[in-house]
Length: 235
Image 1 (cartoon, rainbow, N blue to C red):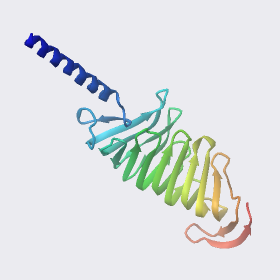
Image 2 (tube, rainbow, N blue to C red; image 1 turned 45 degrees about the horizontal axis):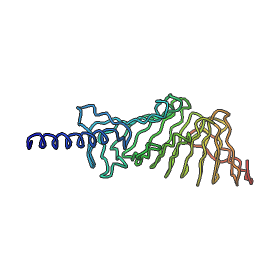
Image 3 (cartoon, one colour; image 1 turned 90 degrees about the vertical axis):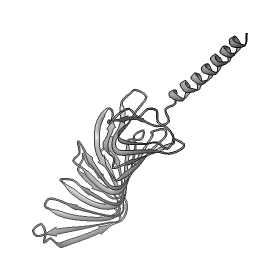
Image 4 (cartoon, helix red, strand yellow; image 1 turned 30 degrees about the horizontal axis):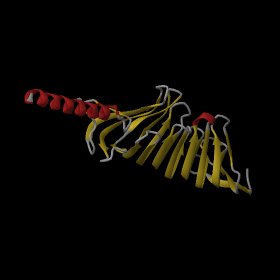
């Protein structure tokens, strides 16, 4: 009888342990990670993985973003993951719209946004726009890409600098804010200065709802000089 009771107790313990383990396996605290070197097992608190690809799908399975990193460091509470030297793609409707790289980044537990920092380079696949800055945030639910801190943007038609850039890819709209200076790359050469500029990439127009200064530049590239200057409350 003692033996039977002992076996029954061990069986009960095994069932409890198995149930707890199954619950742990069902938890998905962070976007799925694939280690290209070897299977490291389940993600443990504080775990660090090398050569990892993180990706986040939406409810239908379409990717929102995918990032490869030299290293991923999970926080002890598994709410965030720090990525080292991230290099990846941002998706919209299943298509890659921007390729991005940076020094470091953070992925939040629910995967609703990804935050990158340090020497940001975001390159538009369709619009030929390249943005450089020090901070970047991708909010796929809003279709919004934010780049902050010493922004420099280049495009075949226009180059600009600012402190913050907001890109609404569905609308083909780029909003530049704070100390904005934009210069056309082709004649007639124009330089625009404002606190905020809205650049409609598809429509090829730039506008300001606030004070605006526009200078016409003449000469050869590299030795342009101001020939005319106009200012207004908007333009």
